[in-house]
Length: 140
Image (cartoon, rainbow, N blue to C red; front, side, top):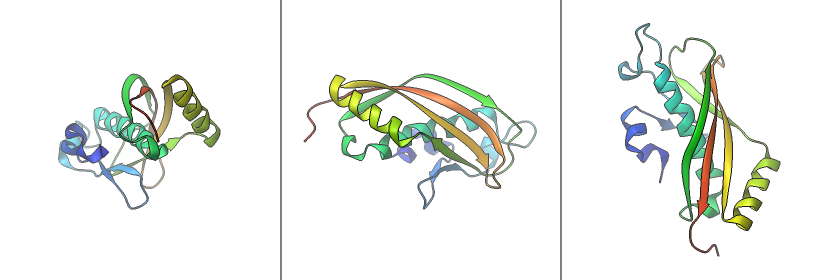
């Protein structure tokens, strides 16, 4: 499933730019009482980015895995203003380790780190999202 098709993400305006980055345009429905971006909207962006990463990092497994969010941790650094963009932080070696575990055990726990920043680069929050991923069916 495309991340922008998830009803809650779509309702809140989560989008994917031409470079594949998950972002959140600034609009009234994501505002907090300081006219900035609500903490919940930032969490949604970071969580959506981590899930989207799982879809794009392992394209051969799309349709063959069921990812479920198991645990999350987020730290807010500063008040967010304006459009926000996410960045996933996962090393290639870690990606290969995940794939090996998934293929041998048919399940894996995957931790995806995400930074959220304003378009000018100021980080507003960062989080870790721990996903339980289970392989369904046979992979060709």
